[in-house]
Image (cartoon, rainbow, N blue to C red; front, side):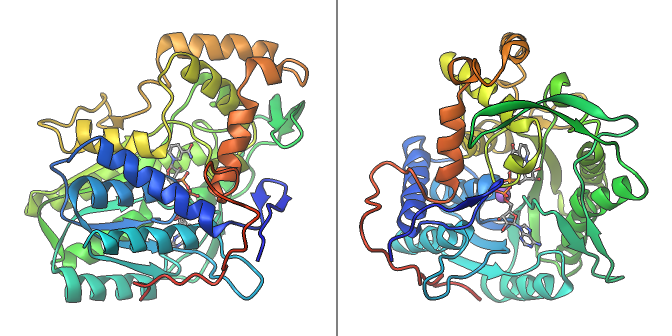
Length: 395
Ligand code: NAI
Ligand code: NA
């Protein structure tokens, strides 16, 4: 079929297999060009199909020749209806990994559930024995608790008072004022239940109980801080409370891992266009200004550059530098004083009229469509493409 982008609000309803394939190949090429990382050998990535999790899987496999098991929640294709992009990403990741002689298998389902954890543990036991790196990279709006069956929904709200600021609709380029009402009732607890650290701990406990963790193993989850501009809606809002919880969980996991000489980290990553971040109000405007400033300074990075640096310079270097709260910081370039000062200045000036010049709206839009395999250089979108792509190592 011929597949074109169809958008609704912050999402794209279609995705292009050949564009996703090209994205995978480009990321693999980047990792290979950066040379070998003396990294992990057997890796579990939870949230492996898009964004930072996918970049972690690619970096493990093509930077360190690691065997990888990827867990994700994606929709398969049906006749005439493309799959979600993470499905195609995983299919083509596996294709390239298998070509390179690397073990790669995938599990598609709800990572929060007991069933998917059970299936993953059994697969590790049968095929890999023990694993030495666990990446936790889920971004989900909902979680059904495995013990109680309660379904929690996360919200993106400020805490205490309403937040008024600017935002941009990156499809139309219109900059407008928004006001977001503060969290009410169980909003904070619900968001912590979805995006906090409880599920990460459940995974690690289950792996440890069944002796599937190799001596010296590491686990990493991803967090975000960002500037004071976005603080009310991000770091000091409901999602920030969940990130506080996630970061605190790294310490309890770290304690439990001492018996296998393991380590647990949170890595604070850069703001990037992913399916998760495009849904957060205000963030797209911030990102479009940030991209402009970082590109001009020659320090812009995408997910793959970020994770390559995480592995090479932090996790698998002679020492793992952290901040005073024990967090790995690969948002160091985003948070540089000169970068933040320029973004803050541009923020004041940002209007519908000025944004095309002072911000990188084009870069934002391109990255957004790229997530779905569109606007990818080198892909012929006029060409008929088979939407019914299989993931060969799907369990
Ligand atoms: P993403 O939306 O690209 O990836 C989310 C992944 O989780 C996908 O593989 C998806 O299939 C999987 N997933 C979602 N629900 C699932 C479920 N119930 N069961 C199994 N898999 C499920 O998101 P992104 O941006 O890569 O986020 C990953 C982590 O990185 C999050 O913790 C996010 O907060 C963090 N982060 C993101 C930043 C950004 O700017 N995008 C910045 C810093 C941190
Ligand atoms: Na991810």
